[in-house]
Amino acid sequence: MNSESMLFSAALGLQSPWHVVDIKFDVASKELHLYLDFARGSSFPCPGCAAACKAYDRKERVWRHLNFFEHECYLHADFPRLNCPDCGIKVADAPWARLGSGFTLLFEALIIKLCQHMPVSAVGRLVGVSDTRLWRMLTAYVEEARQSVDMSEVKQVGVDETSWKSNHQYITLFADLCKRQVLFVTEGKDAQTIGEFHQDLIEHQGDPEQIETVCMDLSPAFQSGVSTYFPQATKTFDRFHVVKLANEAVDQIRRQEAKTNDALKQTRYLWLTNPQNLTDAKKQKLAGIQTMNLATATAYQMKLNLQELWTLPKRDVATTHLQAWYKWVTESDIGTPMKKLANTIMAHASGILNFFPERRTSGLMEGINSLVQAAKTKARGYRNTTYFKTIIYLIAGKLQFNLPT
Image (cartoon, rainbow, N blue to C red; front, side, top):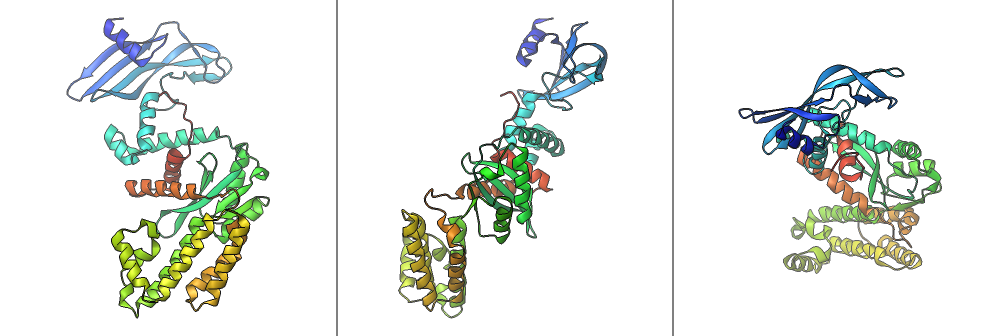
């Protein structure tokens, strides 16, 4: 073996009986080809039973490796086939590649890292590989990694739906609120999604009776599913979704009132933003409109008063606050949207107040939702739910991949 072959054998981390026997550098195509071989008479472990077997035949295989500077690099080997007495004909495992893959482990590790931050199609263009091959690789790794996920310690779960395509097509995400990790993703947003998570939890050593809390929005389907599959769990309705309903009620009143008052036109942002997040100019404009004794201004104050609920120290104090707020809204002459909101909130008061004393929230789900939608926007959508779920697990599942670093 010459010095160049020894150098590349060491760089690839090859161990006996494997070594580099030839190197071909194609300047025109900007490709480096490394040819590997093994010592005659070498034995290899059978992929089925690990028994040492002699090679009786060879089959040529090629793997894409990390680039050598700006040049694409490929490994070539006449790979041994084994005739195991117990398992029959088997192809020996390549120590540098996953079985059946056309990429080396280091190349796949690079691809996974890139795809956690870039659209798969963009990564494909960068490395010169079709996105179909990359999706096949990513899906295989995610499926394998999920098999080893341990959910035995999961006690607090967050659930939320997010759109994956237009025309109201959704998927539902479940996450461990303590470990801040996506556990399960499935299509739809009905009660059956809770049942699918229940089954997946069991398959990953989880105990459904151990679930103490489920944080979610006010979806009747989710409520029904949790009551059916996790009857012992406390339902906590997340403040984000409650405040979102309040914002929608304020905006409905603004739009109704704007038909007769031009001062309210193009002011939607003012009423939906918390005061501390407004610029000085916006604050002055809002203060000026509020002096006009408008129903929108009253609804806005009701919303701000409702938001104070989650700043209170104890559940009993919050209960008193919520009852006073409900009385204020229902006994006022404010529009129907706010009164409908008040009735909805009181109907779900117990779940809302379950925020106390642990101050549980599924804000994590909104953060994950933002990451997921940002990835979808960068990728300009996904062809199917399998790809979309794969990306969600990749960026938020905290999966452990058996890959070199």
